[in-house]
Image (tube, rainbow, N blue to C red):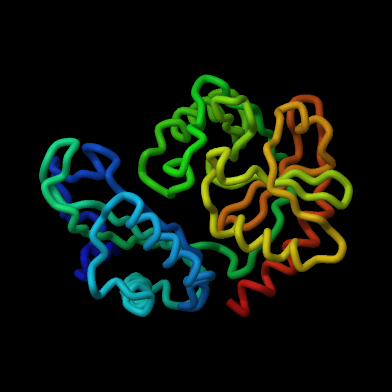
Length: 281
């Protein structure tokens, strides 16, 4: 089931054409959300990130684009797809309407909401082997556009192909200064004893919703210190733990990087606090 501008359509319905600007120019933004029993985790954070991103890309924000409207449309989609109870992954894509070449003929937008079912209502740690490698063929730009959750994801796609071809579960992306920025599908955290480090936004990482929530959790912790600073590839070998985060998966501990093996004790401690925060959000 797909929700296109408020109209519910069957998944096989054709409703986009060759003039679509998301297809032609990557002129689109998206939010991926976790919904449990009709409750959108961290809805306010998703909403304000989307609004800020639309302003940066000079998209016209519709008058009815309130947080309540978006929540209503998500629930409408889930209910029709019989995902109203349980856990679901929801993606909302916003794109400029057809017209123009590089310069759009309008800044008005259309939007699509789609959903798929998830197995667990809570975040959980996967104990399976999770191997990563650096992706060095192309680099992330260290600027504000890289912070946006846009559909310009060519580097992520090529890195994903590289990971699949070489038997890795994920790859870590670098910027032009050869600093570690993020994973293909999430933000990156490194643990050094009681110090937790994550790359800063100016280095080009995604301004992730779960990244923000974990920073809040760690700032309130007396047990750990959180630092936002640049990360060298050499530090990956020195870290006690490395984990990847996004709002759908939660926290994914990396088990292996080259000859280095990691633990997951800190990730497990933080996970409990994250689940508590998600229930209260």
